[in-house]
Each structure stands twice: as C-alpha cells, then as structure tokens.
Amino acid sequence: MSIPPLKIIAGADSFGCSLKDTLLSHLRSLNIPVEDLGVSSYYSIAAEVGRRVSAAATTHNSQSPEIRGLLACGTGVGVSIFANKFPAVTAATCLTKDDALNSRSINNSNVLSLSGIATSPDSAVEILNTWLQTPFKAPCPASQFNPWPTEIQSFLDNSLTEIPKIGAVGAVTDTCSICCLVKNRELNPVEMIPGGSMKILREMPTSAVVRFEAGSVEPAHHHTFGHDLVVMKGKKSVWNLSKKERFDLGVGDYLFTPAGDVHRVKYYEDTEFFIKWDGHWDMFFGEDLEAAKNAIDEELEKVSSV
Image (tube, rainbow, N blue to C red; front, side, top):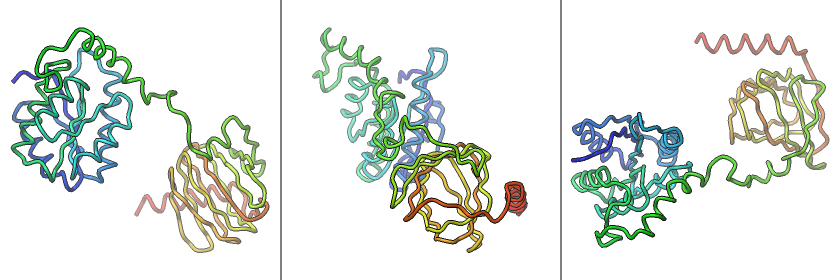
C-alpha cells in the first residue's frame, strides 16, 4: 500500500465512536500517526478537527507530514458540514469506495467523513484504504477510470490555489445585525469605569454595544431597570450579590439581571456585549473600584483553593 507521509486527526460523536475506534486501530497497524480527539457532539468534534486540519493546511511545508482528518457520526453528513466551515478543508462523506476515489481525485479531500450507522467496519476499512491510497487527479469513476484530459487537469491544478481562499479571513462578509450596527462607529468611554466604552444604538427601549478591556472591573452597582445582555466577544464573570449567584459568560451567552439587583463584574479578556433595557441608562454604585477588585480577588482565590 503506497501512502504519502500523513498524520490523521480523528473524532466522532456517539453514533460514530465504535467505527472511529476500529479505523484508528487499522491506521496504527499501518504505522500512520493518529491523534484521537475523542467523542463529543457531531458539530463540536467536527469543528475541532476542521480547525486543526485548516491550520495545518495553511502552514504545511514539504518537510512535514500532511495532516488529514477522519470523522464519523450517524450519517457522516453532519460532521462533514461542520468540518467544511474552515478554510482549506475539503471534507467528504463517503459511503462507498467509489465515493472515496472521487473525493480524492477530484476534490483532493483532506477530511474523510463516515457513517457509523450505514457503514460496516469492513466496508469502512475499504473506504479508508481507498481514500488513503488515491492521489489527487488519479483516474476514478468520474473519469471512467481513464486519465483526465489536459483541460480538466489544468482546472484541478488551479483549484489547489483557489479553493483555500474561500472562507479565508477577509473573504467573509459580516452578517451579524448587531455587529453591523456598531461597525465603524466610535464607542464613547464610560467615565465611571476605567476600561469601558459604550455606543447607544437606540433609545427607549434602550440598546447599546459595550466594550471593556481585559482586567476591567465594574464595582458593585444596580440599575433602575432590568437588562438583558448577550456576549459577542471575550469572557467575563458577573456576581449577583443580591441573589448570591455567579455567572461565567463567554461568546454567545445570555444573562438577564433584574432591576435593583446589585452586581459586580470582572472582565478576563477584551470583551464586547450587546445590552438592552426598558428605560434610560443609569448606574448607582455601592463601593469604590479598589474595594471591588479586592472582593473579586478574594472570591477567585477562595474558589481556586477549593
């Protein structure tokens, strides 16, 4: 079996776990290095494999082995969809040997996706072997197993430089409505809290985009109105002192803080969030900045020592 120098990064969801383990044993028997990322939801495990293969594809050199991915879920489709969200990833769901031949010959596939439900272990090994052995532009079912004509070979060669550009940084238009609202607008400093800035987007009900620098702290305070927020970037913790609760928030997380609830905030990274409340913006502080920092440090130290 002629196989170029490779390393395989693999993962699966619960429906594809058994098949993944079988194929990793086969790869090890061929002395092909593997990195098993384990089992998770089909979208998160596929995204992680896609991220790794994408990073390797954009930095690959002839002195290091090629990095490819191996994924399995119930159908093999879901993991392929999410792996393909990353630049330079060409994930293909293959249910037959011919699928594997076509995906390598035409698409230069670097991630193989398999169905843990529809594909037997023996068939999966055949598909994997075919995928491993088939070089780009090889004769395949799509060419009736004949050599590709010159014009098709030229098209395929050009695809090697054109495909990785699709989805690359700077090529994607920002489609988030909130981000588009604030894009290219200057945020004004929040004078009461160092490191903070804000841009009011709409009045009554009021909405704004707020940014805080890493390490910033909001001393204990409350508002006349309750507010909803969604984190768009970064990482923060909110201590609701009135209810004695702590909320650790990252990208995509949502939090509602009721009117009058006293809360304290710590920002671990440069953070940006969208916030909405029914009324004018106000803040009533119950402590100074140094007291807030000391209280947060004591709380975090207490948690880390548990």
